[in-house]
Length: 142
Length: 91
Image (tube, rainbow over all chains, first blue to last red; front, side, top):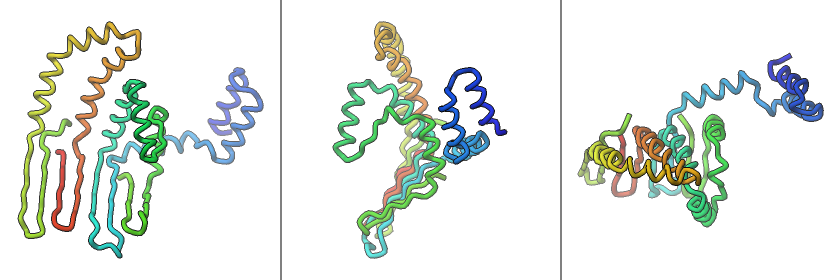
């Protein structure tokens, strides 16, 4: 029996969760939907090793006159920005959300937690976006 | 570490180059002096508005801002256009 399964059974014994909830958790664990403790540790170690978010914009081969952009942002700066965003007053945050929505970005900054960010960094191996065949945008962490 | 120098590098296609070193540490020095001067005022305001969320936000925003500035080191933006290349490097 794994450590996670043992914890779920303990939670049932303590009355913290129902048998039905425990069944759901155990089946999710078996299906690999919930990462096990060593996997979570591995993910955390990987995210701690990553230092920069890189954004590379390169023109497509059929667009040789396009501009090239190379941006390197320290991940700690993003982490700090996220923490600072939590202290933005609600009325200002509403206006920020409105401005983001106007540009087609439907993200609620309040709902992004540091844990979400760490997971995103680990799973953002190499994302390539092709913009109408004119340029390619590569986003990755290193 | 707090970034000390902002380097701006401009390279044109006709091989003319420009490299500027901007001492951003002077901005931090002025900023920190200003922070110290304003600190009593901020603390009093935070104390009076502590019951609303504004006081806590005001109190925590300072250290968070310093944390943000400390992590600016390593920020690098390079733009390569048809005629010129521009780079901004925080170091």
